[in-house]
Image (cartoon, rainbow, N blue to C red; front, side, top):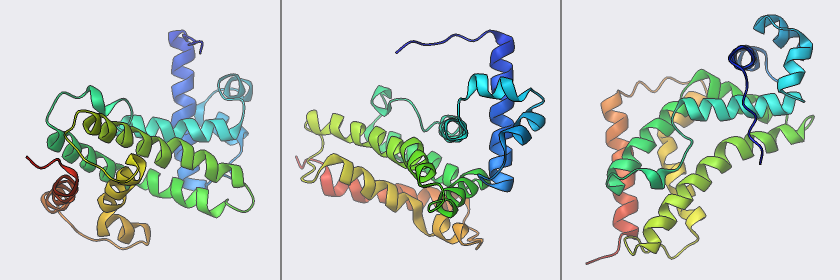
Length: 206
């Protein structure tokens, strides 16, 4: 895969487009036009298409940028800290990302466009949930291979167990417009208990 290095000016325009698109997708949904994105980004429509060939590609890049912003990209296996510490921190970052207005609106956009734009839901699933699950599954597999964890089910299923637990009541409630009111301390206590439950079930017994 060839990596294209953008000039500082070109990279700035790309970031302007991503910022504008992220805000407009959040505010108005997928129906927003590329013309409107260009206007908000203060660039020409031609410039938008020079960076992103389709609106689907732009939408996908916005999702990946949000994951990166919340430190949900990269490789967990490169983190040298103890497994519990890594999982607890990742859990908080993951849940925090899900609680942002941008994440909630992106999810609702993908759902609302499911019938008219089925490809959009696939883009969302691939760039967001699947990518996160794959990264976590790779981390779990790393410790299975080291003999630290004994996971009798496919590691991707184990990763989904954790991710679904990490949603917690606060995420489900907030996606329905209800304010849960949990403090950061209460959130961390819950998330850490999910990690402890997972490790208690799958950690190799001495």
